Length: 115
Image (cartoon, rainbow, N blue to C red; front, side):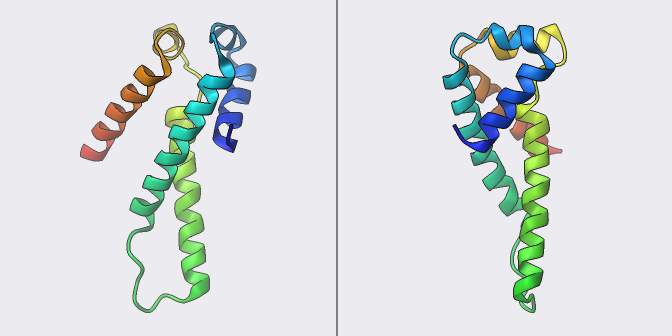
């Protein structure tokens, strides 16, 4: 399980222990959720950072990429890794398979990109 999966698992345990206990295989669920989070962070990082400016120095590039990664992680952490806030959201997270959850999050991402 990567760092995003561990962060999500800890967030769910702390903020929503009842909902966490309803997950049939937490290790598998949070491993797959963490993998999806990593993919989304990587994709968002590139979009946020944009192309390299021609006159950009090394330190400027490192700074730009670090800011982009932090922003991407914040977005993904909020959108994908946070435990559900309502019972309706909990049903979407806990009852369906992880694949259905990932498909749902892909649809949310597509809608965001259209805004």
